[in-house]
Image (tube, rainbow, N blue to C red; front, side, top):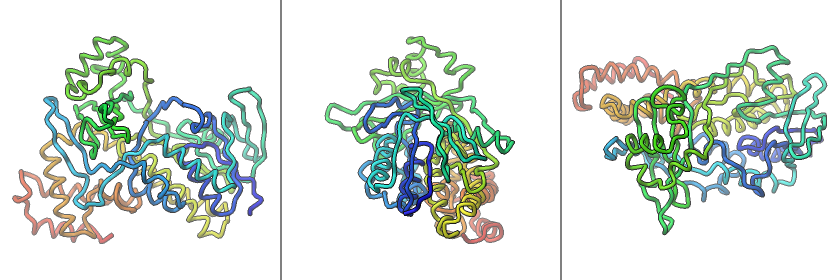
Length: 451
């Protein structure tokens, strides 16, 4: 058992998983969390109720030995179900292989299971209602405040792993300590969470094996299935302009009219729509890029604290879990040398975090608009055909991100090359059968190495 005083700031998904990893390595870990214990108190979600778990996230869970304990929470989604203005449906599969699915999972239930797994090691000690206020990197001290009593305390520690979210106080303290510029870019769009209830029998009112999307060009509605037969529905809409959250305001008639005009089939399934819309908070969307994630062998940022991203590629949680797996691997590689492990984690993960941040922003345009474009569908079908012909060279970018373990940065760079190939091959073409496959063979051999 290590005698090092290891602190994790934040008991969310990444913090709880990292605690399990460190406990498995023989460390005693103290976790401070600003919120109450969600296993004992009902906490307002304030952010996504459910998330999409994909291969990268599952690898992180498997590495910590906790995948089996969350399998019963997962609902497989095989593709996107598009809903047009008339309520017509168009199913677009995510991949061609049976295993190419993503999974809807309750954020809260997953978080609880991870905290339980950490507790069961006997080496992780959670302290709730404890807000990290500031960090003294020179003296290696953290300043905490009790959210209930207001009592403050200063603690010394040997290591600080900060998984304290997109608004990370640790990142702010690191920014001041290192004099670094942190990019915090808010998207001009926000979101509201809504709900499609299950039937009286606990069944789903729509196809449960899909991520449902109502793409409307400048905005969209999405829905992910829950185990109780309901769907968590999210409206993504600009803050300003027409339509926007500002233009809808709090007016019940305006809200109902907007939904009936744009999402008629979904509106019919949401009897409490207007009340839920008015009650639920308006969420912000943004991207955080941090040039430095660490201070010597003392502190390291992981997850949203280092690289918050918008949710449109379903990779925020998956990327954070991959961070945890990478740090664990680096601790193995450098025989427990914290400074080398922190440095290598930052070096390897930072370009990948920037890459998925870019791709997540691009995927918003795809989800709300491009999916309706016949050219998009043609290129998607062609991409699958090229993958069949060259499985080790041509892998659609979405598949590289969701179903493979290639670094995000490599998926991004290969994706750009592949998009160029698809653009050339589909110019003036309206069907896959009309594509010049000899030219396709030549372009792929010339521009893409084997993975």
